[in-house]
Image 1: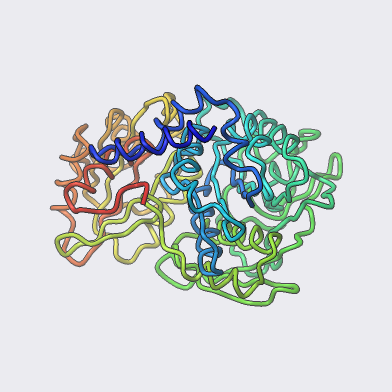
Image 2: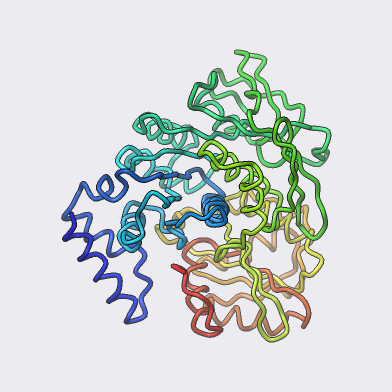
Length: 450
């Protein structure tokens, strides 16, 4: 195994020397010759695995910040390469800093989690949420839930962190357990749910008996305080309770309640990032960190690439927000409509394997209820699909600029964005990598592995 680790490190260095990202290929090659590498590379280490549909990268970044500020050396797949090849690449690259003062934080794809969780020796597992995503790959949400439950079953005595407000996540352990910690909203009076749409049939119905849930409060999507009148399944009482308030321009103040009374302005904007912050705080608490240390680490977090990432060019700001499923784009559009600095928008849609080849999910997004700044630029291999969806939402064709070349579309969108304003870009996964690669070279941004 030592030889394979050294060989993998050499491949990484060689690829970086010629300008390649080297986020998955070294792991793919070395794993082919050493199937026990995951066990070898995580043996004896404190490993946290973060899985779920949305928020894995941001939650991992927040938890890394907590550990870094607490004085640990931290290893994490910051590039977002969350299949086993990307995870092995990360572990090989940072093998030299292993020690008792090291923390390993890994985001992991839901299907990969179901297969590899046990061999990654997790001390802690956090499940963020479950939303419909890549139906051509995962199938329906109950299958994704089953994959995660299978992975948890292989993880031995790992501490399990679950979102009580997500009925599908909470149903993994409806009765809790000694190693299970739930987090969720504790004061529904602070949550404005007056405009929340009805949860979809696949998430708004009880996973055990099929009865539609009754909600007393909703935050977004199907998250909230729910109960089933059919079989009696109800939202578990959170061990870590919280509430939150909007503080302007998409920033939110998080208040931990019960025995952890403290508050923090979440530095990464967006309502959904309140949940990501609490996931990270809970993982830190069950791993032995203090509340003050966890909250301080959250306050020092910066956005990861493509996840509310902002940078300035030519007197304008650019904000990249990854979107890859209906709930994610709905949250992004709400974010856009609340952004006081919005000066333009670009949607980028690809249909490669890593994105999901079925893009019909864009028709489940509520474009009609939000204000989108004009003109709108669309791009990617399925840019015309987005353009058609925008037409049916009521946006005139003359206000939509279509260019399937991602970089050319960006340049035009940036030029049309007024100085002093922000260009908001909503790409899916492979289009984000394509755009980010172009921006790294043009504006000398950090590489995705940094």
